Amino acid sequence: MGGLSKNKLRQTLVNIFRLSTWKIVLILILLGFLSATLLRLDHIKMTELRAAVMEADKENNDEKIEQALHELHSFVLKHIVFNTVQENGLEKITFGTGPFYLENQYLRKANEAIAKAKAEIEKNSSNPNGNIYKKVADICDKRSRANGWGFNARYIQCYQDELAKYPVESSMEAYGAAVLPSTELFRYEYLSPVWYPCGSGIAILIGVILILILVFRLLIWIFLHLALLVANRSGKN
Picture 1: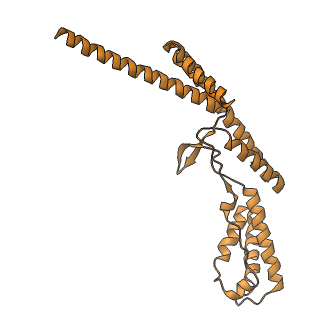
Picture 2 (picture 1 turned 90 degrees about the vertical axis):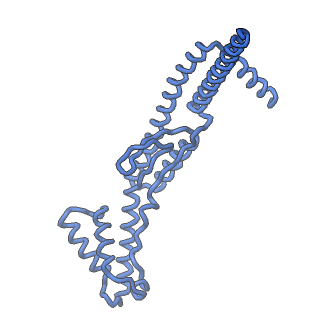
Picture 3 (picture 1 turned 60 degrees about the vertical axis):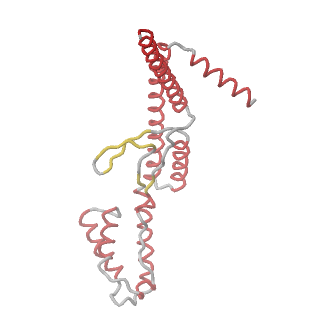
């Protein structure tokens, strides 16, 4: 079977080389439209899968988030996905999903960390600075009620800012601090291969082969043309 496949491939390439130039150009135009269409469809599918991840994040369903992330990652790994992302105010083309964040999952985990710290406060209040976590919580709770924040990103930022005003001492660590998770743990970006044998990848590969054939023919034509000019000059001499 392996030898048969190689023979078929070799015969296909021979047949392509025998095509007239105008036919190759016509096929290239059609392949260009086909490749663009397939790449566009792959991008749309990636966008839909990424949107499913963000929807699962809004539902605060960790199991659904993991499943949606798995489906997105599996798709991106097996397709050529062009995407535009903004970096430092400039748009650039990249392969893959581009960076995205699970904001709701982060806020939930951060609030769980704060709640855990508050629970630790009740167990130990021997901190030389007083009950700092209660102080921080009281300040941020008051600001939250005044501004209608709720337990959102602004509340988390308030908690971090107020907590940073107190020195870190071993006696504080003894009853635990509210260790907020890093935002990087909730940042995702899946990269797609530059080429993969999917529909768009095969169309692009065939197009590249045809372009190489045209270039090869052009080089041969130039070489023969130059050889003919040299022969004519030699004949005249």
